[in-house]
Length: 139
Ligand SMILES: [Zn+2]
Image (cartoon, rainbow, N blue to C red; front, side, top):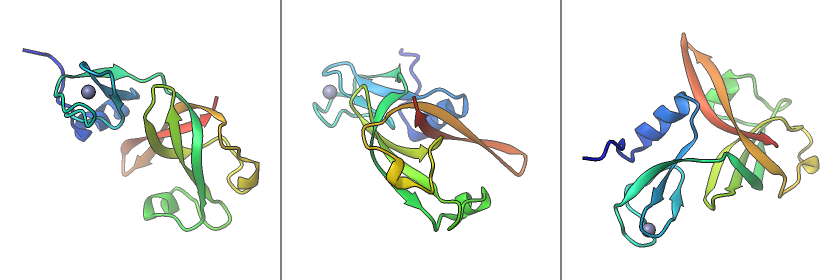
């Protein structure tokens, strides 16, 4: 029996809570998935393994958001204090979306596509619980 945890979003999020950025890698063709997948969409293999992602990548796209979801509004983001949501092209190949921090959100014209980024774990206290979200910042 393998000791690998199931390749579920729940386990992926559990790793995030432990501040581990994990993906699943197809043992047959090497394709890497973030968030994880059980089945390789490239070769249909179910031979997956957990891999620790380097957390490094480049900014592929972003939007500056002035009207956020209730979660972001509660964190203090609004029209005058926008936040950036971004798509990151990870060094290992996959694309992920996450909040972009450490940039001048109110000056999106200064944020450049292709900027090298690294992973960061964003903690938010909600009713005594700590929520951890994936984030990226300039490397
Ligand atoms: Zn595969």
